[in-house]
Amino acid sequence: MVSVQPEYPWWYGCVIYEIYIRSFYDSNGDGIGDLRGIIEKLDYLASLPIDAIWITPFFQSPMEDFGYDVSDFYAVDPRFGNIDDFEALIEEAHARNLKVIIDQVWSHTASIHPWFIESSSSRDNPKADWYVWSDGKNGRKPNDWLSIFGGTAWKWHPDRKQYYFHNFLETQPDLNWHNPDVVREIMKVGEFWLEKGVDGFRLDACNYYMHDQNLVDNPRRTEGMPELDGVSPMNPYAQYIHLHNMDQVENIRSLRRIRKTLEKYPGTMSMGEIVVTSEPMRQTVEYIRGDRRLHTAYNCSLLVNKKLTPRLVADLIEDLSLHLEADEREMICLTTSNHDFPRAKSRWAPNDQSLTPHLERILIALLPSLRGLVCFYQGEELGLTESSISLEKMKDPYGIYFYPYFSGRDGCRTPMPWEPDQKNFGFSESDETWLGIDESFELLSVAKQEHDPDSLLNFFRWFVKWRNRQPALKYGAIELVEASEDILAFLRRTPLQELLCVFNLSEHSRSYFVSFRYGKPIVSSESHDFPTTNLGNGQRMIEMGPFAFAFFERES
Image 1 (cartoon, rainbow, N blue to C red):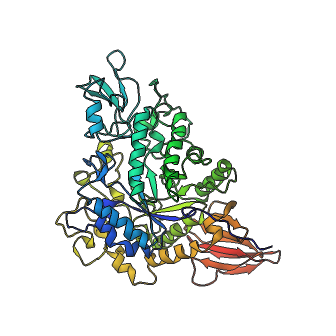
Image 2 (tube, rainbow, N blue to C red):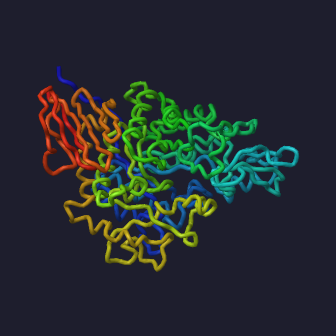
Image 3 (cartoon, one colour):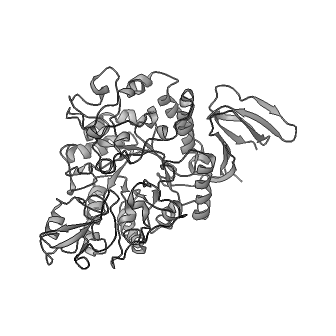
């Protein structure tokens, strides 16, 4: 009997490319990337070869948090173009078989949003309960909740003579998702963009939608508790267990409304951002379990500033196996870099800098070999590093508040280098770009790498194309085989294929024992065979160089 590959939705095991729009490509010379800039680079994106692009917010905004503070959910900010540009982007992307996922920031708005202006004007207006308001207690703030961006999460409003709640900046008041009118309006926002032809939503901070309406204090963390993923231990926010300001039971229930909205548009999907958690995998899986919640979600498991070791990745594999309960229809999204965290290449830089090219390749090979969707951040295909930004040039309010204890998010947001011989490396014709150009990116530019067959860019293209042809890597189950001090090995399998995936995550050569059930590597980091010793006991020993990897296919 011949095994047949099951049918899966398009996003299952797909490769997504995140575009931080401000820094991708500036088409009109104002120093800020825009929608037309993305259109002009669609051929490049299609060549990678990815399945989808995720575009960060381009909506009307005062830009206090660079687009994650929306003042009109239905309008394109003029800095990025107009609605005609967006519709053209959808058409041109789809013509190249690229899906388009857009950010939706639904936990809060900008404080200049008309909804908040009306809500703050009195206690009895039609939108009085669209945000989270409180009188406080005995002349003080309502409770001990903190903003992740620093300070208290409560801001006094003199017109309404009440405090309003903000998980992020004080100019980002939280919407009251307990109010059905708010949820209905947010679903209208979603339908507006679905009608424009988007293929999915990335839901920003979606575990922040609901708060405890009793406004109970958050308890303090005690010694020995697991750290919060995604928050610097220097941030007072990390000193609390966030039981009441986020991640409520009602939060999970609210996802059904989002799913039902998307189901009106077959083939669309949702990808949640689950951040600031002490049990990232368990909580992430809660958001995607079954068919009434989100389609997929990602967390900070591979974004945090921990050393890249076999144990780090093995813990992720084991947590997935534990919480997904072998349900092959549930799949999380995996990422090692994005617009909120330092770039992986810099976080995991080797002590021996001569090994950096090997590290770059193993990072590209490892991520899409794990079970899940894959999200690469713009510039990872070029090997971009974290940029160093001085305080006087810093733009990120998060970094400015916590400087010098936390360097903020600007370092991963510097503009893309396209042409080494052009102004601003081809990103913009402007005399001044919104964030400074990193001069060290000259040799990493697209044009420099495009025609070099040995460049990281061309390795990225080749590996992603190969990976997408392997059913075991795209759809298969995963089983941990080994997680020693330096070697990570796991199986990926479907009824059609079984692959043994082996990674040396150290700066030294290491031996690995391979069963004769598996032939020679079908793909590896080496241009020639690994040094091999046949042991005569059904195994052979291979010598893997620093940051080497290999894929072995089981022979029938």
